[in-house]
Structure formats: C-alpha cells, structure tokens
Length: 246
Image (tube, rainbow, N blue to C red; front, side):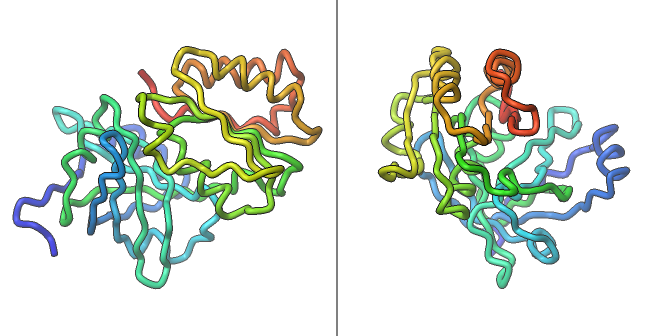
C-alpha cells in the first residue's frame, strides 16, 4: 500500500524529452512496491508498471530510462535493466549500485508507494545472434545487465571481468557464478588494471567473440577504443556504454 509520505519523481524533461518523443518513445510511470537492501551499496526495488511489460519483447538487458529531479526541477535520466520481469503481474525489479549522484540518492530513500516517471524506447538484445564467446567488462552499476544476459543465454561461454567500487563488492554483490569451461569470473580493484586485463583477455579470446564494455565513462572509452584500434576488433562486435560518470 502507498505510504502517506510517498514521493513522485516528475521532473521537467526539456530537450531530452523532445528528442525521445521524436523517436516514438513511450512514457509511463513506475511504482515502488518493495525494497531490499542487498548490501550497503546495492539496493533492489521491486516495482510495478503494467505498461512496462505489456507489449514488449523482453529481450536480455531490456531496460528503462528513469527520470529523476535535479534541484530546480530539471530532469536527470538514467538507464536501468529490468530484472526478473513478470508480465502476468506487471512486476519487475530495478537494481541500484549506489554512488554519489541524484539517482542513487533517490533510491537510497525509496519506499513502497514512491513513483518514478519512465520512458521506454525499443532496443535490441546485447548478443543477437549469439556469438562464440562473450567478454563482459563492468562493475556494480552494469552488473544487472551482465547477469541478465548470462541468465537468459545459459549456453553462452563468457569471460566476465568486474571492477570493485567498494572493498566488499566481491562478497556481497549478486555476481555471476563461475562455471568450469563456461563462465570465468575475475575481480579487479578500481585502479585501472581492469582495462589491461580486458585487453589481454581479448587477445586470447576465440574468434567471433563479442565485447560488452560497461564501466565508468573514461575507462569505457579507453577500452572500447583500444579493442578496435589496437586489436582490430570490428566495431559491430564492441558494445560500449558508460553506466555512470564521475
């Protein structure tokens, strides 16, 4: 049941909103119905939004743009992977890796009854068709997308490189489980070493591998550029998206 002090994030969208409308994006509203604090820095919100799941193909890494309100009322949008969707009930989860920022601040205080405005813009699966191998490079912010891909393509061999944003990430985050001969999971400190490790992994990866690069802005750009320019990976096999910025 909604609480008496529920909050609704309903900002002014400005130019970004106009651009999304031009691409036939659909607007909807998401209600928080439950909250789980997975760790001090990772919050899972169970949500309901009938229009979110109604007529869409729920491809792996299906996501929403959520709108948060900056001081002064301006809109601030961030993309979040839809986790454990249930089309029959319209329920799904959204997972927030907490770091300084408007979206994290909102999620830290979110309780059942709170609402967020959201935009749906049809996308495509991260790995379609399935490659011979996936190399995924991310952190807590992109972990939901990586997990969703592995969960829904269980026969896809993968190398997963994850960067710790907090010392306990490896022990508390819902990271993918290693599977002998199928999924290799490695952790790195946030010291830049993950970029060199990813390039080493790419150099020995099977031909036809696809690369999902999803770190903070600067290392995402650096790694995706090095994959294409230094190792000659075709750009259509490098899916690079910065999941947050400092």
